Image (cartoon, rainbow, N blue to C red):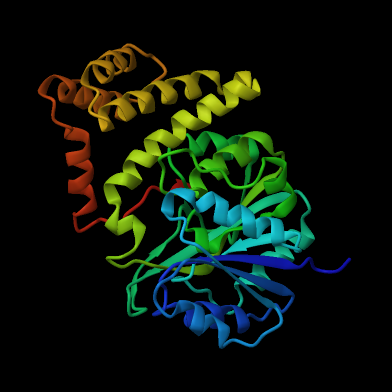
Length: 337
């Protein structure tokens, strides 16, 4: 059995400073059975001209009118429909890969057909490509750590640990089975909602490789920096969307009920707080405080949210801002295994 083709989805918008480096990091991969699908979302710099200089038959370039950050799923799903590979990798136009990224993951999927999803360590770099920190969402001495779909979903209730996206590889069939990439209305990202739905509906392994698989670039123009508040609000909306999605499909599993219901109540309250709907935020935070299934950390934030609803000041967003601008801004939760 041959190693499957990898289709790489690369959305880009005004990435003239980085797109050549991203493409070069694909061309230099030690694994050669790939295709690169680049979708330019109406760049008004010379990104398209830079891409067109790469005369490689494995690179497929498409240009479209600008759709923007709130329609990312349309860009990704257009590329997904074009993809010929059995495996999907994601490389945004300002990120890059180490040379052995595809080789390590493609062989992993080939050797273990139960794997649906794989990710690994990422290195956060600045606009000049200088290392800021190493990011690993799983703390383990093992090179490979497997999570079941159920375990993955339960962790995703807490936070998106399937990051950074530049390290991800996923089976195309699994994505197709859930209708492709998902992006709830009014949110600025699609990875978290997509992975939640993927874990809820797919049976198989989510595998972490404890090795460097991608570089994630941060700069002042990047969405996670320039739209930090929208990112936080989007996270709250994603969980509400996910809960309603499961209810609509009547596919919620009984073993998830208490955790899911508690988290839904908490995030729904935060959405009302984000929207400055103080009365509804107050009612829902009160429900959270009386919910025995809610974790202590969430109860603390519920108390802060309740106080916010009386003062009509979003203290949770203020706490987020403090965390974002602290010296530990790049610290993140890790799963110990």
